[in-house]
Image 1 (cartoon, rainbow, N blue to C red):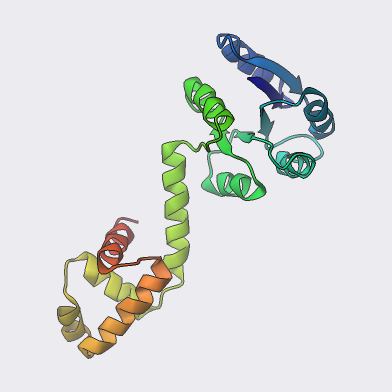
Image 2: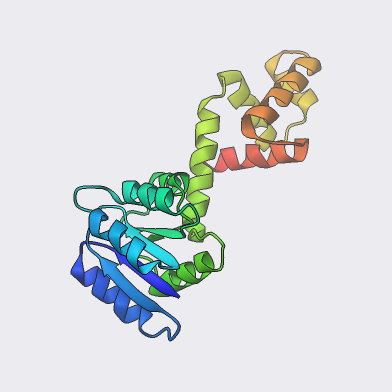
Length: 203
């Protein structure tokens, strides 16, 4: 596997090279900024490109976009000091196949490269969960006060009939509200809606 690392921190690059030197099937190249990174990608044709988000001048996100414009099949892993799910979401949006935080377990870095090289995608489990919750929180923010109250009561185990009685409305009104909630929360069935309500209670 040919790996290109684009990062402007020599210590980080040296650390990555030292880590990957233990992998007999890996050959590593490096570049320190977007311009040299793009040139190295064209010259070396790596199997996987590891791109730091915070490059000098042009960001890693922009470099990833340029690499993909040059090679739509490029397999890119974004590399960052930040484990904020918003950064990971943006990385996936620009076309990266993986995201690794620099403070993660080094063994995860190797696992990420191998998984992306094999055609898969890679996100650390906790980061993937944070991204899912971030998306769910956005959906919750779109609910009305009445809908939020229905979600809370569903999570407490109340039936639609009991919820109708508590809120002083008809069963049909609650049923209609639940149908709307399924759409807003991406729930296909009543059981999915219950799970979403329970997750809302945790958040």
